[in-house]
Image (tube, rainbow, N blue to C red; front, side, top):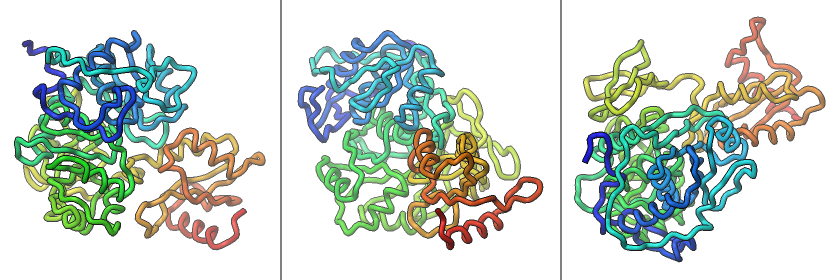
Length: 458
């Protein structure tokens, strides 16, 4: 063994690493529990079939096929590109930005202008060959993840194999109950997003987790899929999903734990989920650049406990810089943080333009930049108005020109934005109440918005 490399997985041959909820044709109608031995067989076979390229735009939607694809790309010494969405414009943007790319998918709509490999049309078998775990160079660029930005041009984050392995070891210590048992895990977040990658993919590769490929979304389906899993069971989700689960009149199976990304999560909802699932909810704080950094048992306290190995340094009154041995460079967080002691802190707000909708983080600044690029726009602004609904929605006020219509603007936004960031309300106005210096004070903005909402808007 070399200090310059480390194993692809840290599991025994017979360990359950994945659970297939629906038979997959490309696996020979295989379903149920997949062992680490079977998983490596699938990884090796796929790695041999992949194109001779440098970057794989990994768009596999089935979580197990995504895991296989992710590892096959790494074994082939290529780099996974994990975009925040599957839009054709995003695919083509990545292909332009990263040379020698191809799309690796399992049946989605893919750009005809880019080489593609459809995993759903290949065949992977379990050959029960010797259980030899591939070793990966520590400095291999395994993944380029992207922030869940509001536009296709989101920010890339480079992750070496060492970074992924080291962060997973830290996450294992804090995210999982202390037990030698295998935890069968259902996640409601995609593997391409950093939260889903860390919890539902990397933990399965390097800890006692068996990840299901189920893409359940609605409460009844989630309940059904959890009940179908062996025990002990875990759920990985977001506050938006958990609110829906808490409101549903359903008796859920007991869980050994719930992991939730912060949005943040209220103590009331955390308590409701703990009662509903007879378990403990761990809320995890992190960002795309660093990954997971801290946790709290939200039902019990509001303080966050920083993960050992993740170091905070005060930058100014509100912001902190984060560094760690496995991270290439320090990152200044966008959140306002109050350091309480060496291991605990409080979150006290976010930068003004950062928003979180339906579990996806975006920037009002970037959305407004996109809005301003619409050819038929004379003036306009996207903002988050006060509202009481569970899932907040953006609104926009626009001054259209050149005969442009609201429908044309919506079509334009759909080409570039995740649907969560498309304004639900778009109001046309002859002008915006800007000050002479061009600024638009929030009180004047909201007054004008209320006026437009209460009048007929063509």
